[in-house]
Image (cartoon, rainbow, N blue to C red):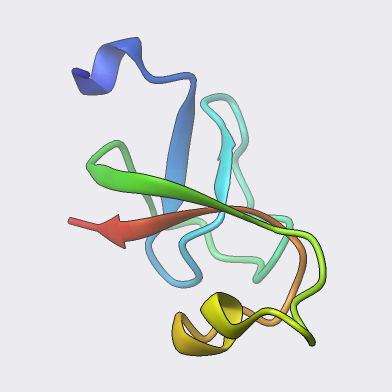
Length: 68
């Protein structure tokens, strides 16, 4: 899918996926975003999620697996 067709952009610092019109990341406070990302993971319980631990995600939400 092209970047234009994606409804989200990814924070370069924490990989959180946010709406295109978001200016400050609600997870880490960064203003550095990209439209170049791959894969989606939704974390419900970061304390019990092996994937969240592997990807170093400490909060619940929607995240990109890879940020380019």
